[in-house]
Amino acid sequence: MADEVPSLAESKLTALVVDDNFVNQTMHHKLLDRLGIQNDVVCNGQEAVDVHCSGRNYDLILMDMEMPILNGIQATKRLREMGIESKIAGVTTRANEGDKKEFMEAGLNDFQEKPLTISKLLSILHRLDFYVQT
Amino acid sequence: MQRQVALIKQSLFDQGYLDEQFMELEELQDDVNPNFVEEVATLYFKDSARLINSIDQALERGSFDFNRLDNYMHQFKGSSTSIGASKVKTECTMFREYCRMGNAEGCLRTFQQVKKEHATLRKKLEHYFQLARQAGPKETARRSK
Image (cartoon, rainbow over all chains, first blue to last red; front, side, top):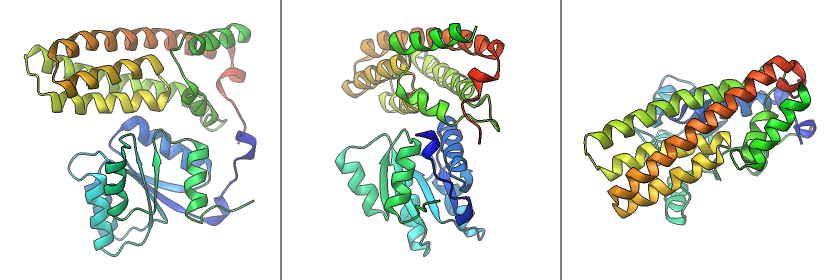
């Protein structure tokens, strides 16, 4: 499986990891790194909004749902209200149908259950038309 | 030595301490980050120790704010799931069930199990990583970039 991981380095994709959990931040950052996707990490939805207010923009946002200050649902709504058109993939362990529906309706493009793995991330990228065969 | 390391790792899976998510971590280890798994595990134990302390303090105060306790444990379970800490994850799930039921005694009892499994895993992984470092790069770096 590891030998088949494509590199998207040539595509110059950028991503933002939004998660309050340090372990998940580290893992998601590394997962994206492994696929050649330059990425930044923030700790909650408010920081995700702030970083966009500062003028940064990303192709992909990996948005956790449960976070302090501003959770993933609220942050997703806020970003869409701001006109942010980045692809946003919700990632969460709380995956009952009601939560998922509410999260999707906030403005997600995709949804994946944690923990993220290389194959799950590739699946997100493929569904969002980021997947590039190298 | 490397065979010993491999056997120890296999036993962690066979005895249910780790699940396949740990292997996903290993897949991310490379020459650029040859100690990635150990670094993530260290981060996990540091973060989870903080959460254990918070829950301990909340329970010692006799404060059964089940929402708050559940939020702490949600974090703990999330981290445990991410590194493949299977037994710890199971006990976290049980604790959260007792939170949902508002069962204080169940929470107290299960929390002892959470701490026990956490301490056991920590000891076993510290031993594994120590041996892996002694065994050399073959066991610590999984792939070349």
